[in-house]
Image (cartoon, rainbow, N blue to C red; front, side, top):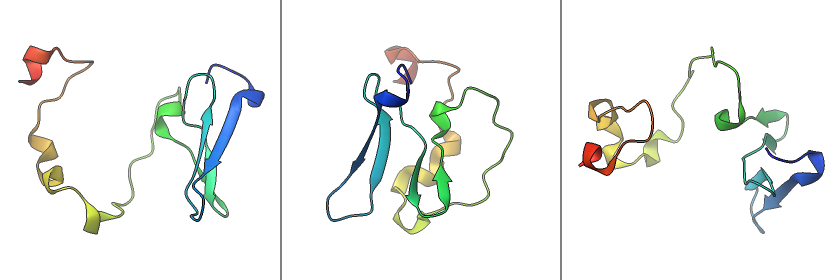
Length: 86
């Protein structure tokens, strides 16, 4: 987040429980409480080493058809060049 607490904004999609909190200056996702009693912290907003391992796969009935083969795709340490992903 580039700003301070005054830069934080939240948006709730009308007629739903879907809510997102973000920095109005840079668009970074911020922690939010979409579910009462549960704080959701987007991993991308952390700046420390993540030691916790996933404990479950959720919404697996709606996963993309290509999800099963993700272990087979190339991995890159950073942003690949176009020729590297062809």
